[in-house]
Image 1: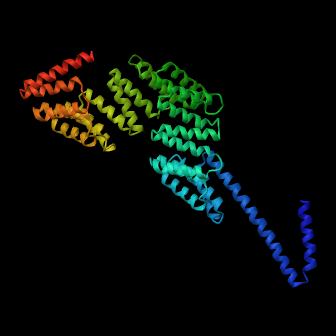
Image 2: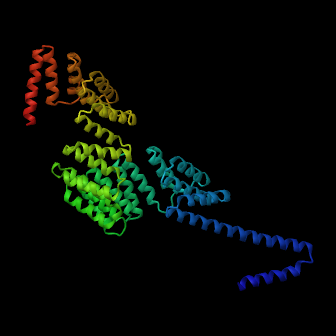
Image 3: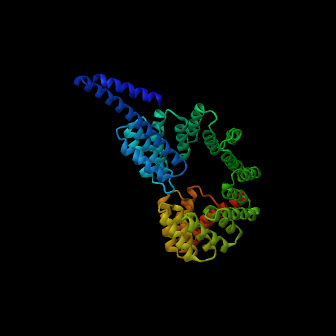
Length: 464
C-alpha cells in the first residue's frame, strides 16, 4: 500500500513539473496511459485465467452446465487471446464428451475450434480422438492421438495410452502394448498404462504378464479396485475361478459403490458350471438388490433360469432387461424361451424386433428361420435361411437348416445341394450326413445313401 502511495506522490510531483508545458504534459499523459493500459491488460488476463481454472474445477466436480456457460463467456470475451480461447474450447468440448447425455458431434466441433485457435493444443487432439473413438471411427481417432503425441507437452503419456486403447479396440494388441510401453517410459508407475497393458496381455492369453502389471498397480494406492477387477477377469478367463471370486469380493469391500457389478461378475463365474446355476442366481439377485436398474444382471439371471428350465422366470428377467435397455440379445433369448414353450408367434415377433435393430445380422435371420421351421412354415423358413446366407455366404449351419426345410418339402435335389454345401464349408457333423442320407433315400439313390450311412457311423464312433 505504501509503494502505491509513493508512486502516486511521485507522479503528482512530475505532473506539477510538466503541466505548464503542452508538449511535455502530452507525452506524460501518453506515458501514464501506456502504463495503465499495460497494467489493466495484464490484470484482465490474470482474471480470465482464474476464470478458466474455476471452470475446470466445476467440470471436475461434475457441474457440466455451469462449466459450459463459463467456458462460453471466456471464448466470447477473449477471441483475440488464441491460447486462452483454445483452452476454453477444449474445456467446452469436455462438457459434451463427459455429460450424462453425450453429444459427440458438439465435442468434435469444439475441439476443431480449439485447434483453429491453436494448432499446437495437443489436448484438443486427444479430446477429438476420444470422440471419434466413441463414434467407432478408429482411423480418425488414431490420427488424432498421433497428432496429440506430436503436440502434447504435459502428460504426453495419455496420448500414448489413448492410442494404445484404440489399438486394443481394433484387437491389434501388439501395437497396443507398444504404446502402453511408451507411456510407461514417460511415467513408469502409471496405473492407467499398467492396467490397460494388463488388459492387452490378457486378450493375448499372456496371463503371466497381465498378472505382473496388475500386481504393480496393487503395490500403489491408485486404482486398486480396477486392478482387482481386471485380475479377477484374467483369473476367470484362465479358469482359476476361486481366485476370480476372491478378487471380485475384495472390490466389494474396497469400493462398495461397485458391489452390484461385482456380484454380477461373481454370477458369471458360477454360470460357467452347470452345477452352480443356483449360486449364480443368488449373485445376480444381490446385484439387482444393489442396483435395480442394472440390465446386465437381469439378462444374466434370465440365462441362468433358461438353463435350469424355469422358463416363466427367464421370460420375466428378459422382459425386465428389455424395459431397461432394448438389448437385441434379450429379445433373442426371450424368443428362444417362447420357442421352447411353442409360442411361435411371440418368438417370431421378438426375432423380427432383433432384425429391425440389426438388419445385417445373419444370426437374426437364421434364428427366425428356425422358428418358422419349427412352426412348419417352411416357405418363410427357407426365405430367412436364404437371407442369412446372403449376409454370410460361409454360414454352413444356414445351408444345413435350409436343406432340412427342403427335405421336409420333399425337394430332395435342393436338400442334397444344401447339405453338400454345408459339408464343403467344413460342417462335417454326423447329423448333416444323416440329413443328406435321408434326401438320397427320398430319391431312391441307394448307393449315395449307403456312403453317407458309413460316414454317419464313422463320425459317431469318433464322437463317442
